[in-house]
Image (cartoon, rainbow, N blue to C red; front, top):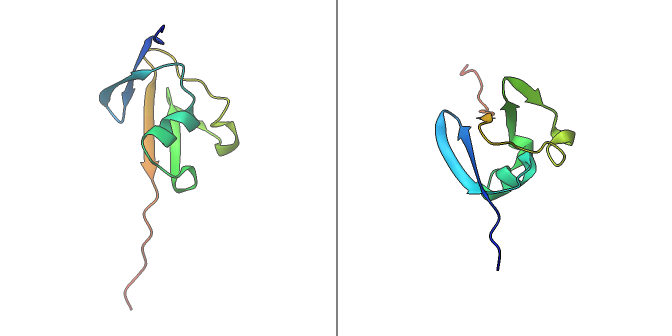
Length: 75
């Protein structure tokens, strides 16, 4: 059985290796992150949520996943 090549990216500043090919949507699924709760940037470009399935990651890509944190003011 032939194994797919390993894909190496930088994820939030750390090295991350996984089997490729991989889309942004696939990455979030593997990380168990809900896409509606984060913003994703690839190589300093913000990716629209509707483009997560079609945005394929490439060797050496710089990926930032930012979570939204809710809060409020105390009265």
